[in-house]
Image (cartoon, rainbow, N blue to C red; front, side, top):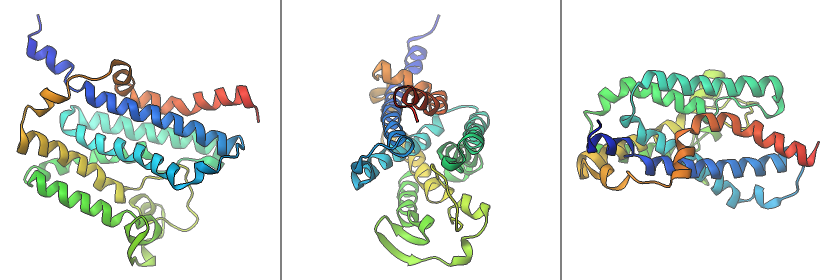
Length: 256
């Protein structure tokens, strides 16, 4: 018979699952709008506005932060990281074959899978760092390198300095964040800057449980909203299947 502590641990992170589920719902709505605008020709200028950009960024920021936050709580990091990485590869393969004009290369699943795998050796090093300093340095590096894809150090409209052009050559450098000329992907998340956001999530967890209160998760993250928690627990399979599902529904109602 399970003890009360074991039962509590089973439901400990429902709140985190609920956040992930909420972001899934937001992402599905965002991608539905994307399909309507870019695949079915719906004229909606707002979707190209700064407001839509903020919506899109809110989804990916939370997903990546949450992935880093949850990494220390997980088990079988190698298996999980490889699963997510291979799922990203599957998305790339399918889109390149069937939708080359809307292909996904170095998408968010590839990024998160690589970050999860990279954390396996880095965790040993990061454990020796102060959680507060780790958080501050990771967040600062993310903000400083946010515009690396565009050839600059800086954040959004603020460009601090231009980076050397010789960095922006080849697929490997594109994967790292130094985007080569002519590269195109509808979902592009390079290691730089996004790995630093993943690290920020990792150190956020460390800060909460080590420097504040080791039982803070027990107090605040046990309960969630069941429908969203369900979605969050099955986020990977939902992510893989949601676009074909959305496209099929829109094709049925709107045609091409």
